[in-house]
Every structure is written in structure tokens, then in C-alpha cells.
Image (tube, rainbow, N blue to C red; front, side, top):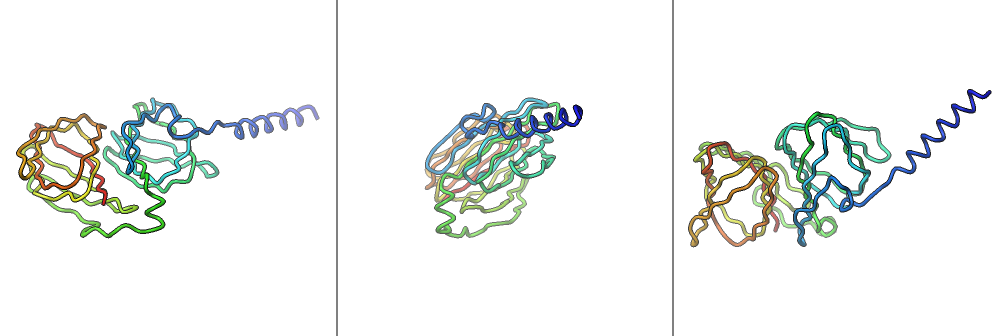
Length: 233
């Protein structure tokens, strides 16, 4: 009888402990570091130590995350069974908001990503934004690729990879966009009417860029340049 009582006490303690798992807003989660915020996005640089875990935290907005380095993560969504994810460097995914979870790093290296929340997601749900002229497709360049991955909430997400000296041909940015460096970058932007501008970025750096210009982009570094862009209307 005593052993049964002890067993029930242990089970009750485990249930109580699970129920008391602290839940925090993403802004209060220690592994999420706010890097940029404006009316369009809220951007966090995320780093979870080897074999460590985040706190249970809320994602109230739709978001995209860009993985930095290969990793293996257990995703424990509140109320659902755990799911193990094997992620490669540069993997970029969209997730709808409205949930809380814990991310557990199963690897011996830090788990890093850039998380980009869409601050106008509710507006996009109620009134769909205009269509892009192209919403999916791979473009093979001389010495590189431009891969339109997806469009979510009216935001077009593209992966660009350029070998040394390769150029992304002239294109126009009518609206603003966010650049996320997957690799270290040494790039030259030749803006029509303004001339060349050099940019140096470390892996995980982000930059918000205004619209209203046309340019080409050239990798002037000695290694492949890989980055993600998120374009807004």
C-alpha cells in the first residue's frame, strides 16, 4: 500500500511540475536577442547552447526562421508530442503563430537561427496582399542561384547564393526588404544613379533596406556568398 501511495505521489509531482512550466513572451526568453524592430518585422538572433533548451515561450505572430549551421533540435510544442528536426545551414521555414514551445538543442554545437516575426500578419489574414509577379522558381545565374522559396502573408522569401565574382543581375525593389546573411558576406551593390556601395556582413547579421531603387549585387569576397531576402509590398 505504501509503494502505491509513493507511486501516486511521484506521478502527482510530475504532473504538477509540468503544469508549472513557466511560460514567457518571446521578448523575455533569454536565448532570443532582439536585433531589429519596425512596423513590418521584429527580428531576433537566437542562440541555444549545446544540449540546452529555451524556456517555454509564445509565438504570437507568424514568422520565418533562417537556420545558421547544421543542427538537430527537439521541438516541444505545448499540448503536442515532441518532434525532432534535423536542420541544415541556411534552411528557411515559415510557421504560423499562435503557439508556445520549447526548443531543445540535441547537438554538441550551439543552435543558431534568425527569427523574423511578421508584425502585419493579422492584416494580411483579413485582407490578402497583392500577388507578386513571380512567387516560386529557381533562377540559374552565371556562378550562382536565385531561388524564390515561398510567399507567406504577402512576404516573398528568396535564397541567393553567389560564387566569388558572380553577380545578381539588375532588379528593382519597389518596397522594403530584409537581408539575412547566412554566410559571411563581402558584396558590392551597384545602385542605378548612385554608384557602387560595399557591404560586409557576418553570418547571422541582418539589414533592413528601403525600397525604390534598382541595382545589381556582386560577390567581391573569396568564398560563396549566401543570404536570404524577405521582400515586402
